[in-house]
Amino acid sequence: MKYRNAALFVVLATVWGSSFTAIRAGLEFFPPVLFAALRYDIAAVVMLGYALYAVERWRPVDRAEWTVVVIGGVFLIAAYHVFLFIGEQGTTSAAAAVVVSLSPVLTTGFARVLLPDERLRPLGLLGLAIGFVGVVVLSNPDPGNLLATRTVSLALVFLAALSFAFGSVLTRRVDDDLPIETMEAWSMLLGAVLMHGISLGLGESMGSVTWTSEGLIALGYLSFVASAAGFLIYFDLLDRLGPIEINLVSYAAPFAAAVTGLVFLGERPTVITAAGFGLICCGFVLIKREAIQKELRAARSRERSGE
Image (cartoon, rainbow, N blue to C red; front, top):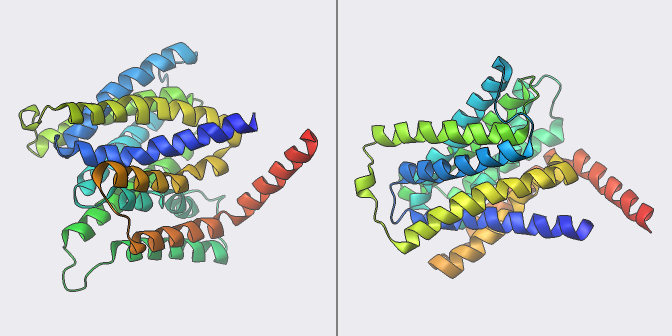
């Protein structure tokens, strides 16, 4: 069983990490927000079909459940992907993945403000600060040109991570019993609709799409593999590993983004990217140190029980 979980973890990290490369590749052929909307048109249909098959309640039934869907659709899908897809136009796959890996750190920060039962101790606050420093190091802003393309692009990706973290905490404030598969499916559907509206507002159109095999491969990979298959693996691992271990996917994904970006797009990771990633990881460890220690003790206990 432990080998199965480890294998699925590696697969998920690879799939989600390489999705940043697929986004970067597809942006050559699709307007950014329309690209994100089309991705979730397909993914929403697949996930809704899975919810119909896998869970008893395939649609929300009360106000609390619809509230969770709206939060998910607005923040976890629409806002996150609008900022991410626009931002990735001016940066590398690896750099975008590193900034997004800040999401667990930001989630803890928002939880401190919005969830009264969750508070950060001094070391946790230090970890939060180190995580932010990591993003600043990664962006390496030029004081004389703060509107440089790369700086603005990474700022937009940071807003994507911020949106995802904020939405994640907001969903925890709502008392609902909606299966996560159902929540994801309907959030994807709502998010796709919202992104189509934003795309139209930005003047994007299907006429500006360059239909090529490369673009369709990128769209198909993001829709079926990264979104549909990726989330199904995520659900499975979430039940088996818990939220702490599954959060580590965020820190494995940048490696996959760096490798696939180098192989398929010729992107070369920089020392600055590595330094920013290292600081973000340190921040995460400081914030989650007690939970990590607890998980390590539980893992040792399981190993001894299996001997």
